[in-house]
Length: 571
Image 1 (cartoon, one colour):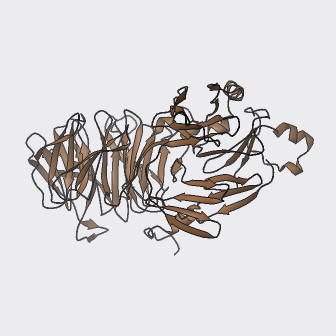
Image 2 (cartoon, rainbow, N blue to C red):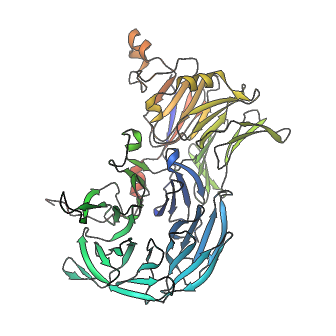
Image 3 (cartoon, rainbow, N blue to C red):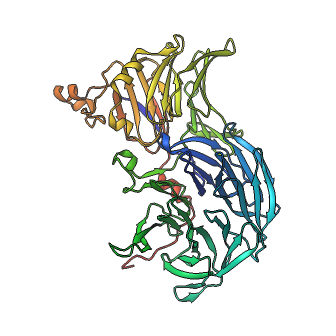
């Protein structure tokens, strides 16, 4: 790999916003995530959990609810009282509509995806019809005495459960009238609380309503009679979220203590046809409140105040025990937030609402951030490569201002790309960890790229779960490609042979101490360093100097609100 002088930068004071809502789309296997600053992110779970789309937030858009509707349409609502639909192709807000009920706390699409319900601050539940172009108000349900904090449709679409303060209402959708009002017990650890907030409800096919509340309880209700069937006290703090599997054989809840609980429907006895809900697995992957959860066919998904998006696979649902069965914790965006000027030795940091330009030892804050596409410009200024929302890459001739060529389509999104000096080869990284090299002048893949695809990458390289976010080149060594993700920095030497699956990919031996035998066995194209992490940016300042921008997770956690204190044994 060689020796470099390294500038280790840790003054990029980037703190991701807390996660407020997640919404899983079973048809497209995509996950929508909204944060407290109004940002909305779309993850393609089929493309190695890549964050393929991103909608910048705004301080006036605090999102409290997020849901998918028919035709892969995405809606959000929040405390400004507006319902927003997103244009997933143009990557902007399609329209915003005032619901005229004050702040919106909850939202749910009907099982058919043709209707939308919102729960408001003034106690109203409003029904909207989803038309091809917009949504249209249809009617109000019976107004309640307090804000509607949670909503859930019965799978038949005939009834709706609504969680409020101290009670749960069941509505008839056709008439909009209240069928039952179920009073929630205020008792918490033997003490009567002033209020009990129903943070989440789930309506099952058999008429059971599951509720989670601020008293730390998960409760099961019979919607036909309006009576409590069973209650589980699972936490010493609020249970804030719930999500049910499509098959209704399991559900997941998140608590303010940072714990996620998994409930499963299991037979009472081994030979019995009668089943009951049992709390089977607790998971502690968060340090703070778990504000939202989702349940995909193969995993439990959670997010909250600690900013982490956690995807925990259900091992009994995963057919092949490979890297897809590994726990994933996504903290940083899958896009580059930092740019470097080699000549001036400047770093440009991108924040949510401003940019910071740093020279070593000084800083100037300037400008505002706009949503941008993934672009790469050749060093000579003749070529521009652009990648949009699809996996396609188009190359333009800058001088002639016209399309030069289109790189052959690939199934997975582009995560990073760069154009090499002199040769004008475009190097492209995709979310499945494949790397291609495309000759812009010749309009075809290079011989090295064809060799790589024929030989294949090392299995450990393909099993990495964080995308490549930056690619660059050594100014004096045209055979070297420099790239990195959040947890490794790699130099690919195209003059050396590719490693096979029997070769050691991560070389633990420093070159100066290797014997001839070991050196021959480990000499391959990939030289990888894991010293710097989490690594947000790494690039060459000159041929012997690197700049590395790190953002330690402990520094982020130190700036979050304090978590709920738990009493530990012996303290």
